[in-house]
Image (cartoon, rainbow, N blue to C red; front, side, top):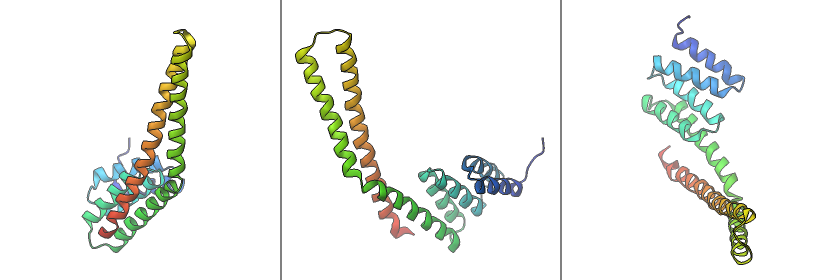
Length: 167
């Protein structure tokens, strides 16, 4: 098996990136970083691949690492700024409908609780009762998860706004 140097791995990663095979591109960039961990341009390339594959927290880490290695580079700062702007836009788009998501989550839980009340008032303990009970519990959990995801979007957007001043 031929041992590859960092430049070959980066070129391979660039090819995968252009083909929109971001996971493979990230794998190549990781291998290149094992050989040259202080190469800030590879950190940027990895960050862009992660950004395109919706791994935002890891992408931001890569951009921050690149700036740590090359704090004077304007292009590195521009890449991080672009990434934060793109992530912020995505979260803002999700936030615009977050009120609807919370409303749906509450409706799901209210429907499940109503079903639960009817189950205990009108039924015994047959298989239909237990099936409906399990379905109700799952609906309540999904309602909480739905609302929790909406809150997470808000927190991430707030984090991105707070850290704008650090750019």
